[in-house]
Length: 515
Image (cartoon, rainbow, N blue to C red):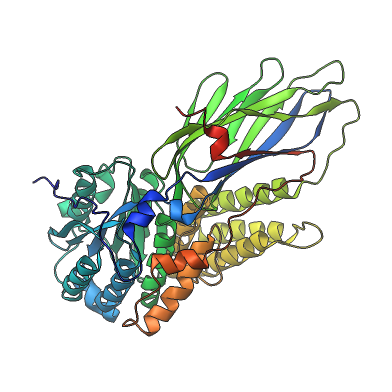
């Protein structure tokens, strides 16, 4: 069966609150800002240098990419427990009503078999009401053929006819373990699509869902143990998907002959390719105001005299929300080689080093815990907490450090017994690891306390979802209303210390540099 019956977007469609035609003609590529952060001085002898790259998407949300979302929903028998199926219907209602006519939605369900309830439908008022009515009629039954559900969901995106400038994503929700006799969902090829997975309820099995998300292009794994939190969790994922202003982002770092050697590049679990002199990281999409941090570990050779060499070249290319391609001119990291080099305290470097320390500690602890060494695992996490508590930037712990401490304390609490670890600790640790690796927000328990990587739109959607859960018959704000409430577009920082090089990439600058 081929799913090439997706709706063609009708630009003349109007709703009560938004004009698709107006949205379609106002899309422009977002700006980007690159910061290169490193120690300004290095000694004459052979030494190691850490170079932190900070790449941020600065666009208008009205310039976002239109999105095709395929919801892949578990409706197996276990969804009857704790009224999970009822909670799912409310969450779906919120998600459907937040989409605008430039977006399309398809719904796939799975239990013993998979069913496509709708083709990719343009989100007009009529189609929203139609889909909500069918979703409200869902009944939970049967086993959990996640393999069939994900296979069908990906196929809906692969078979599309109308794809120009459009983003494709799968949102997969399950409350239990897959029935393995049907096949392993981790083996489903997901192509170049993002698959955002949600473990719903305390019985969900995180390992399969995390692995599916990690092998996709920018997908996240969310841990939603409280069945009352699904609307809020969906809202956070949607807050990202509806603000994609940069696509196909690739960043390349290159060493300089006789001046530097790249030893390693830390960029989470994003794909990397390397040759003898350079490393390229493929990030995929950036949500508006999202940041990607890359730590390059560079070796500097011994030199005989003081000088100011270029030690690292940084270049990147991307596509706008419309799909126009741009290539930024390279910028360089510079260091002064001095006989009496001064080491400065650079807050951003300190914070990133400690974030990576916390991430690696959790990874190590999870390996120990999964191997039955729970006491050793808890000790690793507690040692990381102690290290974080000693971190002070400008004599005060930052919000990042406070959040990391809270998350690691939660994980440590879930390591009291093996049963607690398997039910609560493992999904919590996996969601933490997945989010930190992606540098992208994903739900992990208490959404008010854990906001790492959350964007302004996600924060707004969280409050909307809370209100919607209390009054599901009241529609949430439209996209037009969301745009009116968006904070002003950030301005590029004009003054920075010498060790930060800021390069603003503006559309006018790119006029003659289109690929």
